[in-house]
Image 1 (cartoon, one colour):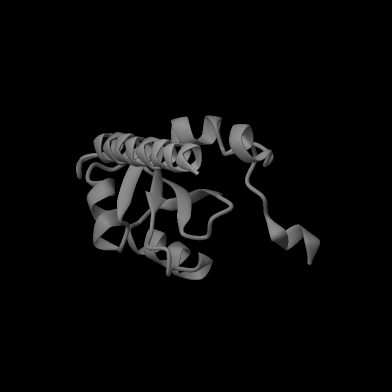
Image 2: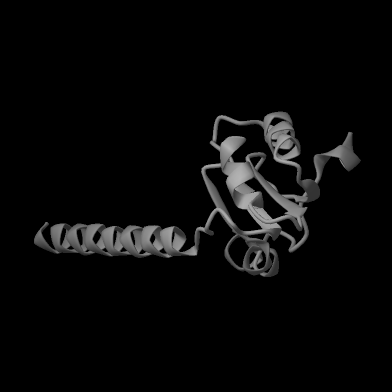
Length: 122
């Protein structure tokens, strides 16, 4: 029994350390309001695909790519202040798109590196 408690404690400590480091990394990677170019916009989880598309369009961005999560879009606009406009339209975080496009969950989940679109199935 004591061995199981020790293993559970170790697991909790490892999860807490991972959560802290992930949170710190994502907070540090969030772009300033003046950012422009090809960006990854993260909208609230309650947003569906249509709401995310509408919000990105209100910000003046061109949709470059859909991701498999409906609340995340790769959008592009070359005018300064694009990140601020995305936040005003409802984005909770804005990141550079390049690192996320290179690793689109293929290493962790086996998903294909391109965005999965269900439109072609129906």
